[in-house]
Image (cartoon, rainbow, N blue to C red; front, side):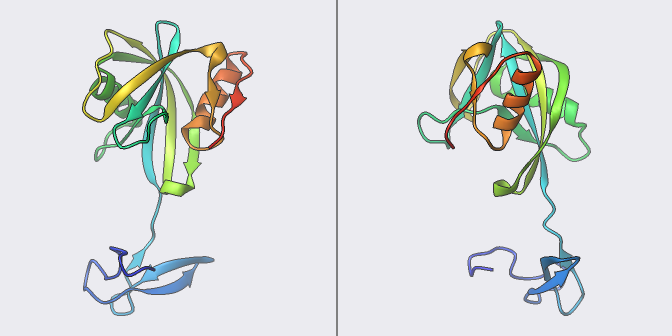
Length: 170
């Protein structure tokens, strides 16, 4: 645990957390009140948006130039994942979406997330919100995927549609 780690102290009693092996995992635990920081993955929805028979890949304002991905977002408390993915598509792209299928669930260890990916048909006019700064429309037969995170959902959906997508570098 680094000194800048915000999980240094117990959220219940403010005692400094210590490392303890629980269920074969190294966990942060409180020696005073037995609080355990489980560090469970955060669920995130991902939308593979199809628009005008092409796929939408967007660039987040915080990402470097040339890096594009799917529309993603966190669930609100008690929000259904299907409702969340449609909300994200509307918020970020200003499109009305219709879910055609659930693509799958994918672990994204780097961000400690569980990605829930859906294929969405989008209608309307694309207008980006402040989170996104540009987008690309890519023909399905030309789409490539990154071998991690939402890229695996892109790969799996394209293969299910009869395409043979090629891998891109991470």
